[in-house]
Image (cartoon, rainbow, N blue to C red; front, side):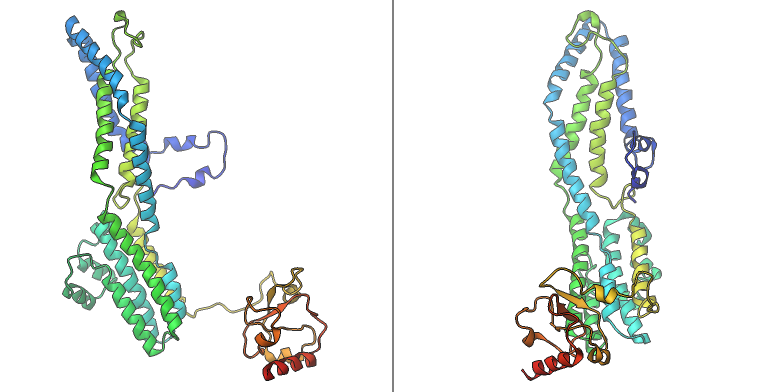
Length: 426
């Protein structure tokens, strides 16, 4: 999983990021140290050969070659090529993260709209969410090496409980040249339609809500499939790689310290360690490594997505939401924040010409109330000048709205009932 460090830098302080420089897991040091060691060894070998093994004529030829490499190596547009590539790779990395299918919205809709506390209703809800999670397992198994190692065959998925043996036979019986991740989602839609026929889903609006959330879930699975199918063009990856490695291949010769006696421009000092060349290699090669790391976050690097943990989390919260927590509510009781005048405070706002929700009173209490004049509108979009048409009785509407500044607290219960009768006659 991506190495998290935000808690350590929650507060801005002096040298706040410095403590992060000494971490090894997920660091650039762990990612780059092999290439860095190879570059240092090659540079040292060339320097030793130049100083100890070449005669004067050969040294002169080497020095001219080094000056030539130093002059023309800067023609390689390193910053532009690497910057654009890493930007595209990061956009792709973030898109893959946001495309990861999470069942949270879907399980809320299933729990709230697939009714029934009997065994049949329980199995319907559990099976619907199991199909959704099975779809994500199938797509992740095809793109993530961690999931592939955990589920090398469909039999392992059956053993893990994401699929039954009969469902596996149905899946194997249906032939397709492409990934079959969409088949469990088709089972989901058919089972939801069957639940509607049985009356477990109360109306077509609830069924439509189920289908809408299912399609959003399917779209994310489809995006992961396409991210794995369509990569950043290979030619651009090759251009970036060749540019970086060729540049530092020329630096192995062009950045050598030449004999100061020959008085070459910029070579008045003879050192053994090219500090700034090593820093440049660390930055540019590290930049390339970042692009290699994030171009596919479904591997086994330190900063890759922990897909197995996400799979376990999704199946656990799905079953809790639609089974253990279904209709399992705590008792309703007054909280500590409630006040004696909380019901009146909602209708005493200074804002005028706005329809504000009023606490719902039982009809019997409402008829005897002489404190509040209620104008019962069907919604906040009701026309303020058309009160007679849009008024409803307390029995017809669960939530009433009042218009402020309209004589609140000045009308008796009899006048209120007479107004309702007049409205019904109209």
